[in-house]
Length: 307
Image (cartoon, rainbow, N blue to C red):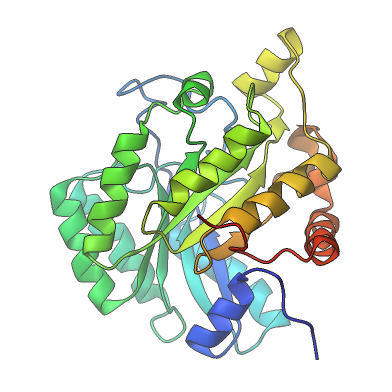
């Protein structure tokens, strides 16, 4: 029998909730972001790829139906009885008029009503209206809605450096509004951002612990080709975390993390040819195994040092 992990895994969470294999299908609905189009800023977050962090999502040249069916076919070949969570991944997927959002969300859920168990939406905390909150609350009563928000760091000085163009206060408000409507919330963080210390990264976990969230995704910083951050690095290099440093920090963050939060991801994804630095995240299983080994070696479990 496989030994239980030292933290709450997504696989275990899905198995407990839906009693079977559940797979995400990442889609690209051709949105944009308010810090790309000039509403709040230009160019997007400095680390963000030209695909709007939707590098592994479906091809935006295809319809959402075509994207969904193509990816589903690959998954069922491996897991014939799997259920699915369509995941609007690229850019900010609540950044549009409400009627368009309704058309997209409802259309996706109608693609495969028997096998779709929830809808996941990646977006920014500043891309909501009161009407949208209420609609999502109503939709959540019909089919579970999961909102993924990019915090990246609780250090607002770092947030300015990466051109996040969104405040911690806006995120706090957004999480409260979503949780009023019982909507599941997942936060994304990045370890290794410019000028961040280990203490900054631990402080981000302490900030998160104050919020009513249900999941977290850990990412290592990737310097991607054709991004502002990579160009900045070439002009003025800053320290890049090694695999050992990253794993050590993540294990400390896991120890600090609230015990009931589900860990959805422990390592970053990206298109191999676009990853300029560092190269070690390309071996995702190695990263996950090293984190597991360090947890066991230090006998650390999630929440051991939760305040």
